[in-house]
Length: 208
Image 1 (cartoon, rainbow, N blue to C red):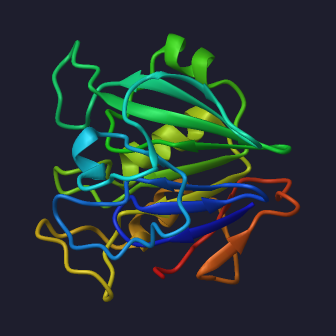
Image 2: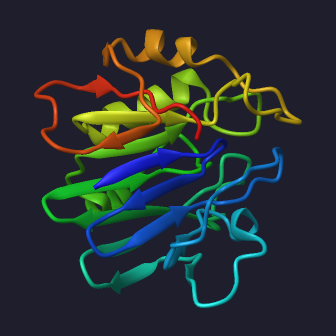
């Protein structure tokens, strides 16, 4: 499995048989996500997949789906800016080969027991960290990661000199300091998942 990052929440997962894109658009930044070979799009909020059409299968709500070499489970969540009882956001648990990855999206930092049970064990967590009222900040994102106990964390939606956010996003360093986990010495624009670390590690993937 290979992971690429296009800014905001936009992540592309490439497996042996499939290409899955998560949140390919943004409402506070202009993205250039490559959807040429994508067969499935996962939208943690419907508006983060605007313009997706053609033969691409769009998932924008909770449910369970099986595909050629991966499966997806959508889990309802309260949006970061939502009120109690609002479950209009969706987290996605993607399983492929021997790896499970969770895409958090813009959610409230307090996960319920039912949500944690539905998520189960995960190897990798992709979590936004930019804060400023739009999404999880360093503290909220770190709390989510600690609750999920993955081996690898991929932080997204932070300040970048390659992308202009209409709502400024915090620097990545705030999150890494708050989490206090090991940060991989090598940043990459394409991360190939091979052997997972034994201890919690932050993997920085630079914007493609």
